[in-house]
Amino acid sequence: MKDLGYLIAIVAILIGTFFSIIGIIGLVRLPDVYSRMHATGKVSTFGVVLLTVAAVFATPLAGSKALVLIALLILAGPVVSHAISSASYRLGIPMKSAARDDLAGKRIQPPANQAQPARAEPAE
Amino acid sequence: MLAYWRLTLICWLIYLAVTANFELANLVVGLLIGWVIAAILKPASQSLSLRRLPAALFNLAKYTAWLAVDIIRNGIRVARIVLDPKLPIRPGIIAIPAGMKSELGVALSAHAITVTPGEQVVEIGDDGVMYVHCLDVVTSAAGAEEAQRKRRAMLQRIFE
Image (cartoon, rainbow over all chains, first blue to last red; front, top):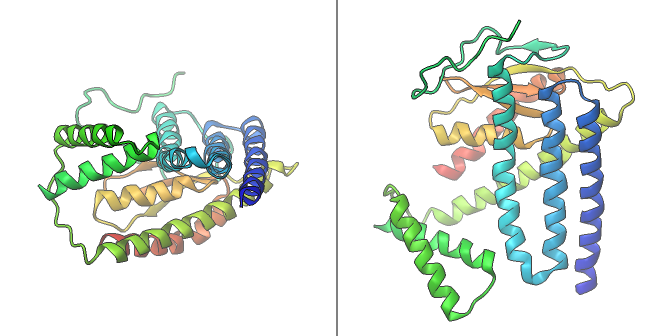
């Protein structure tokens, strides 16, 4: 039973490390902020979650901690990448070689408690 | 009052999971911390029907499994795009109507989209339209409406 746990942990570590490396390669190769957020998002969902899955199986006493950690990571990771890409769009950072942009020309509503316009014009 | 004790219980369970220590002193301290957090947050009272709880939990498990399969499939797709020497990306932003009234439903749909590699929500309009940035617009746009319909049905089964 213990050996089976270790086997699952080793497989999870290998896959998690593999996807973390792919995420970093993507971070270097992809052209702009928005595409790069996909790559870093993959590191946080695949890489880190699989490494914590390995922790669940390899260290039975700390397993419940790792389960809470997985839930928090899956809930908070997408919020971070959404916040960064949304902030980039509001700052007017352009997409490189965009095939399609349905958001172009739509006015983005500033939050109710904010006096200044949320979307600054890109600097000349 | 019921919502208050429910929140206390949830906080207590999370505290016990994090500390992983079941001595009496730790149980009491966890209960006190949960009680204080619930007192500060003041949860709105909601009707909780215990009869609906097993069905909701079952649907939640089904939704999580579907999400996991989706994440793995899209993760492999994005890994192949990144490792391809020609880097065949067609980035762009497409609009997907969420088709849901409640803010929680729209937020959970946006979460499900963003957690899958290759698609992420950049902005949500007032009318619940999600503007999604995709690494491959053509493939994503083809399956987007269908996926959102499925997601909506599953989320509604959890909360109804």
